Length: 237
Image (cartoon, rainbow, N blue to C red; front, side, top):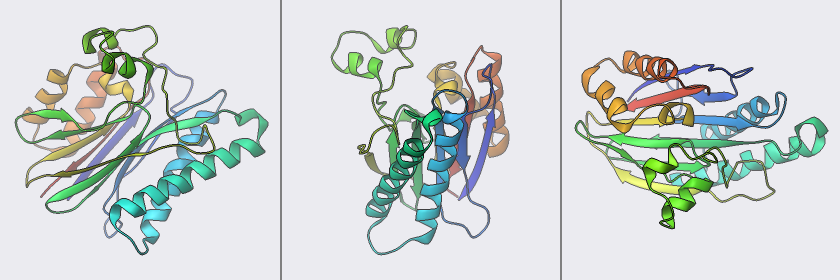
């Protein structure tokens, strides 16, 4: 596997995104999180969540990858929720999270919130995860179109966040992939600023994984994203 990642601060007071990609010999895993909460609470939430999930999955244990991922997400939710309960200035904080654990012929992914996982097969860029957001529910109900959702005034309202409640549900995805395929994990700072065609063009035209990652982040910020922008890429090699 090849990995690349980048995260840059938009027009926010600080970058509340966190990510993980492995160094040599570490667990095959990529994680992206986008924190929320007043002051620096969002930064704390995303950092705690990523640190906990990675630590749990590095430790491993008995069970399938799916079971280990779900257990790690529960542990991360507990950690963030308990920290907020003990620190009044962090009450109500939470974070989105999307992760992918790749294997040679398949991958397992999970998400809470509206950070996304996309699968690029060399021709198409397909969104794998489903957003847990107010506008996603409106689209699902047929009340607005996906195009309208992209510009809806309440598009930033998420309906699930890791650590914001005592118990939170995680969505799991199991998919096949092939040599050359790329998984893209990202926060809403990316897809909120770029159309699918823009992201697809970068992945098609830029063969170097790190340069593709850097280009995606830069054009999102150049395109007017006021949010922090974080992207992690995994290539099946």
